[in-house]
Image (tube, rainbow, N blue to C red; front, top):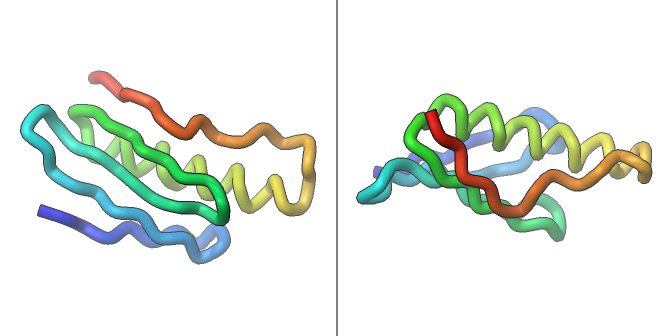
Length: 75
């Protein structure tokens, strides 16, 4: 199972995939790649949208920190 995710924050795209041990969101946002894994797909989607928002605001305000490139979200 693979679902494409779209973000309105800069029109970024990512993929939500089913894995044997849970779910994974992967995306390349600008020049920044992210790989988020966890058991809750809704939480992973929220983390993806949060990362897109951070990258979007970083272009406007350079002091905004970059999102983490790899995280593991647990329930």
